[in-house]
Amino acid sequence: MSELKDAVKRKASFIATVKAVFWSFLGIRKKNDYEQDAAELNPVHVIIAGIIGALIFVSTLVLIVKYVVAK
Image 1 (cartoon, rainbow, N blue to C red):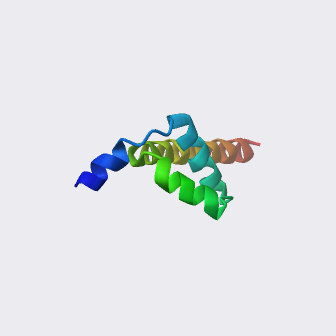
Image 2 (tube, rainbow, N blue to C red):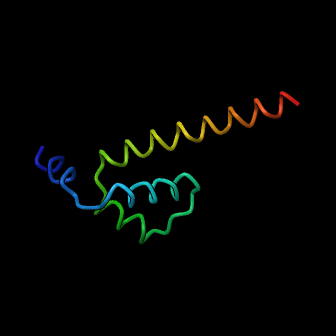
């Protein structure tokens, strides 16, 4: 339980988390970057950024499909 509390207290900013999640969505992550992220990123921020990223991705796909089908 204390490991979870320690993980939530990590100091990386939300913007750094968003960047890490963005690169992860693209599948372009170096092993060193991944290890650094695992040590520094707040897991709650990662979950929130992942959900936001997934929503943006799905919304973009829906808009593209609607645009293509409308023509």
